[in-house]
Amino acid sequence: MRVEVEYGDEVLRAEVEERLFAGEVSPHRAASIRDVSGAVERSLASPVGARPLFDLAAGKRSALVLTVDGTRASPRELLLPLLSALERAGLEATISIALGRHRKMTGPELDAHLGLDIARSFRIHQHDALARDEHKYLGTTSRGTPVFVDGILFEHDIVLAAGFLEPSTIFGFSGGIKMVVPGMALAETIDANHFLLLDPASRKGRLEGHPVREDALEAARGAKLAWITCAVQGPDDEAVAVISGDPVRAHAAACAASLSVFRVEPVEAEIVIASPGGAPYDRDMVQSKRAVEPAAACLKEGGALILVAQCRELWGEAPGFAEWMKGRSPSRIVADVRRRELFSLGAHGANTMAEPVVGRGAAVMMVTCEAMRRELEGTFVRGFESLQGALLAARERTGPDARVAVLRKARRLVVD
Image (tube, rainbow, N blue to C red):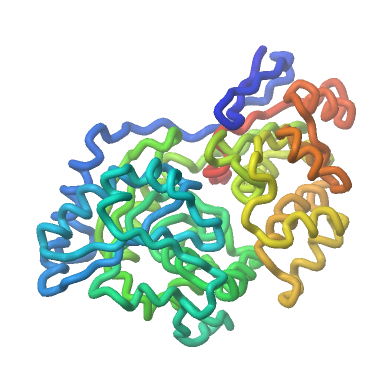
């Protein structure tokens, strides 16, 4: 039989004996919203845990609208009705791309991402996590995170956020307060907050008791985020729910809707093939590594994990990722990442790749582009040009009767 997984803008295929196919794990299907703009308008009038937006905007003159970058789907259908509502309420809006530590978008990328009518009609600000003098210090959290956030948050009468919600490796779920920390935070703040990822309670699909999220909630209290509008994403980036309102209560309602799509049961196998979901979710290793955690949850001891990700932008915007991968063994990575003075997002990425090796005795392989295969030389991850070639190598390790599981759109899966 033939198995398929997304890879960039393509679909890669490989042959697997039917008797050795353990199963495919993918998100559940959900009814999509055909009129997203209409759903947004209704949510503005009937928010969760907040007054309607028109009432909230009364007496205010300016608004800052935080939104997502090009590593996510276009927020255009969310922004248009939100911006229109703000205009009717008499507010002048500025849009800020909450980049966190991602690179800035180019002019053509912004035009495509937001649409020309938005990109050319509104002031567009892009957060820069490395520009320390552009950030305001708000104190230190109870967990020791120094809080620096972009000063533009304090230049407007009201701050809103519009974006998408999905299960998140780092935060439990995306959206909500994540648009402020890490979205609008200094790199130092982001790294200190993300160090809490090493706490076992920091799990994808968890809302309450998630240390990274709780620290960010505390960090962002002074940042004035008053409203969120979020589309709960389905398997193909379609909106399956639109919820607006209070940044905490509306976010919780959206998270419940998301779990109904992405919570799945594990299918155990000696070989697990996993794709984050193709472009744009496999543009670099920072994004692509998010498929590793759910894949490892399905992997039997001593098995082989095959990550299928194009990675045209190689390691991505996580300083030190390549150096940690090339300069340390898996066991050294897992040990060193727990030293706060060494921790970084690059270190966390390397740890994600190393944990299946250390924790399950697995081999990690990767089907990727030629440039990324060269980058993997000298690391513990073996690169392959074809999915069939990686599968053959995995069988050499696990034996001819090893069963194969396939995880599609794995970056969002909550394996539970």
